[in-house]
Amino acid sequence: MSAVRTGLPVGHHRFTLTHAARMEWIKLISLRSTLWALLATVAGMIAIGVVTMANTKAPGADHVDTFDPVNNVLAGIALGQMIVGVLGVLVITGEYASGAIRSTLAAVPDRSVLLAAKAGVLGLLTLMVGEIVTFATFLAGRLALTDAVPRPGIGDPGVLRALVLSGAYLAMVGLLGLALGTVVRHTALAVGLLVGVLYVVPAVLSGLTGMTVAKFFPTMIAANSLAVSKSVAGCLSPWAGFAVLCLYVAVALGVGGRLLVRRDA
Image (cartoon, rainbow, N blue to C red):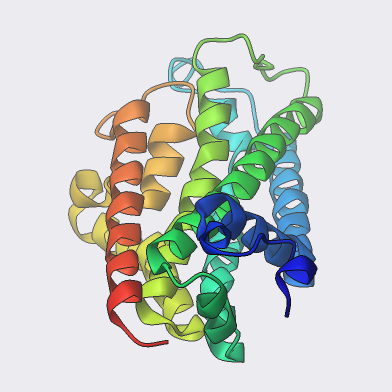
């Protein structure tokens, strides 16, 4: 395929991060699975948020201080994270499964640039969708509350922060999925690891040790640190939890990038 047909200039310039990102963007938005995954995330999170808020009851006198309807309306993150995480996995494992990774590496021989481009494009897309769906879920969920329940507003303490960090959380999980897919290069195994990290391990640990260790896992950080407008006792603060997530993603992508450079396609 000629440089003209691919839209890339001739020579070494075609290996820059900008052109690699453009290629990855075209590939990502061209896949039907991307559209369906994002639509499922939006529809699922909004539906769960509305149903949860519709069933939210007014707090009793002894629970007024801890009552947090913002946490209720964002309950759909438990579903959205899985869909976005699997999308992240497929961004890289889909190419290994089809053999297209060889063509991709021929076009972008610098593998660190390739992974950076994939991460940048996936991160940007999932961040935009994440922010849109969290705010849309919040606005739709507010309407489902009964008149007896205090209706939260975006200007209330902690609400805007909770919405913004929850949207960013979805992007972080997408990048974590990309990292796991890069490390293992197999869709089923990467998805299995993702399920373990997001659901199985923290659930087991919370049953055995409470929140002592489980609070450091992504799902617990989302539920008890990010998607709350009021602090939860015994859990990480919102910004500490977000910092831990950033560390996870940075380490996972670093390992994935190292293995991508060292291994054959």
